Length: 345
Image 1: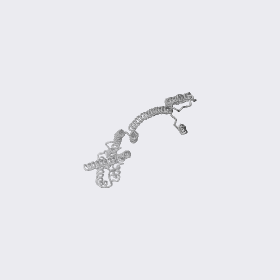
Image 2: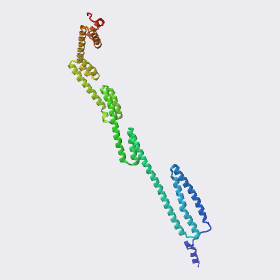
Image 3: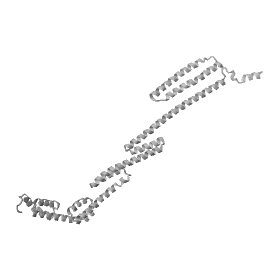
Image 4: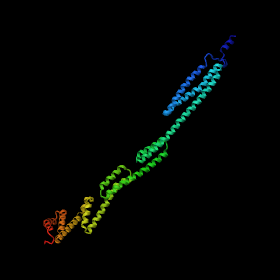
C-alpha cells in the first residue's frame, strides 16, 4: 500500500489533467492589444508623413511591422484566453502557439524581403542616374578641351560601375578629340611661324616653337620645330649666297651690295672672311661707278643730279679719295644749281 501510494504521488501529470486558473478575465488582453494597435497606428502615421515629406522609409517600415505584429499576435492572445476558458491541454496550446509564431515569422520575413527589394530598386535607379551624370560630365570636359579631367572621369566610371568596355570607348573618344585639338592648335601656331620665317624673324619663330613644345612636349611634329626653323633659315641663307654670286658675276653692283646687306646677319666669321675680298671689289666698283656718274653729270651741267650723286658718295664712302674731291666741289655745284638755265660753266 505504501509503494502504491508512493507511485501515485510520483507519476507524471498528463496533459488532460492540466488545468488553468479561470479567475483571470480574458477581456484584459483586448485592452492591451487595443492600446498596442493605437501605438502601432501612430508609428505608421508618422512614417507615412515622413515618406511624403522627406522620402524616408524607415519609420513607415517600422509602423507596418508594428501593425502586422499586433494583428498577428492578437489571435495568439485570444487563443490563450480561449484555452484558459476551455481548459485546453498544454501540448495543444504549445502546438498552436508554434504555428502562429511560424506564420508571424514568415510574414515578417516577406516584409523584410519586400523592403530589401525596394532598397535595391532605389539603388539601381540611383546607379543609372550616376552613370548618366558621369557620361554627361565626360562630354562636357571634351567640349572644353580638358583632356586630363576627361581621362580621370573615364577611370572613375570603370571603377564605380565595372564597365571596362564603355570606359575604354570613352578613352578612345578622348584620344581622338585630343588628337584633333592638338593638330588644330599646332596648325594655328604653324601659320604664325610661317609668317615669321617669311619675314626673316627667326627669333620670333623660335619663341613660338618653344611655347608649343612646352605645351606638347611629346608630340613628334612639335619636337622637330626648332630643327625645321633652322633648316628654313639655312635654306634662305643658301639662296642669298647663290643670288650674291650671280649678281657679282654679272657685275650688278647695286644688287650685290643689297644682297650683301641681307647676308650679313647670317654669315659666320669664317664665311665673312672668305667673302671679304669679293665684297671689297664690289664696293670699289660701286665707288668707281658713282664717281663716273658724278663726273658725267657735272660735264652735262646736270647740277641737281651731280649734287645728289656727290651726297651719296660722301655718305657711303666718306673716307675715299673721290669723296674728298666731291666735297671740295659741292659749294660750287650748289651755286651753279641756283643760276638760270643757259649760264656758262
